[in-house]
Amino acid sequence: MLVSEIILAVAVFIPFGLFVAFFSNKYFRITSFFVGFLICEQTIATLGYQIATNYNNAVVPVVAILVGLILALGFIIIPVVGFASTGAMIGYSVAKFCLLQANKNVFVNSWVNFLYLFGISLLFTFFIFFEEYGVYVIGTAFLGGMMFVSGVDVFAQTGLNVVILSRFDPKIEFLKTNGAWGLICAWIWITILGSLFQNRFFNEKVQRNNPLKLKMFSKRRNYTDEASV
Image (cartoon, rainbow, N blue to C red; front, side, top):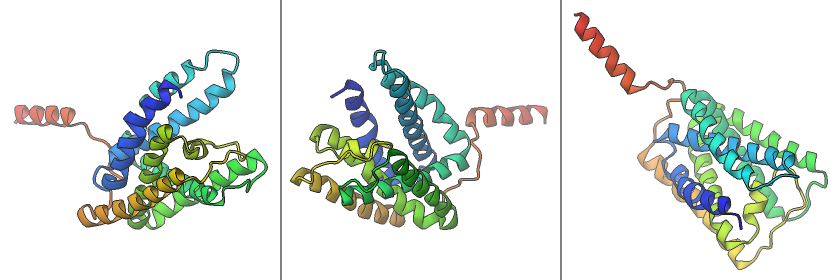
């Protein structure tokens, strides 16, 4: 078990998974940052492991985490990008859940497996703009559940985490043990409870078209206007 995996599980996947499941509709920009970090970190890590096969692989996760944190700021500054990316990650989680239930080599070719994941992610990117509130609330609860159980499985070692984070290898499977079934049930329960919680307490549409405004600069502008008067 890599130290980077433990750090991501404890500091990112488990706490932010629950946060996304229960508070996404209230704190849209934080959710966008988390989604942006997840996409960038996993993409960089995947490319890094492919490129640095002959080098020290311990450097790859550190670089992926640091660069992912920086690039994720763009998902906050441009909210529509964060919103669309959230839809894509919801689609990814749905696609992975279907593969987990099949628990067999549905796709024998790695690129077919990748295109399947990409196609479902793209489909939900359109869905989230078409049915904004419902897809966002239920989808983020589902996505948060996936991230939470993925983080827990770093310690449970059922193989679910490996299946969720694998984009290219269609042959990776996990054994449906009692622990694995427990994680899947937790995923479903988090989806249900998170959807109900957000619908009950945060039932407004997210402000995905409002650009980020820094209060520091807005206050300085107000002081300038008052001084000029």
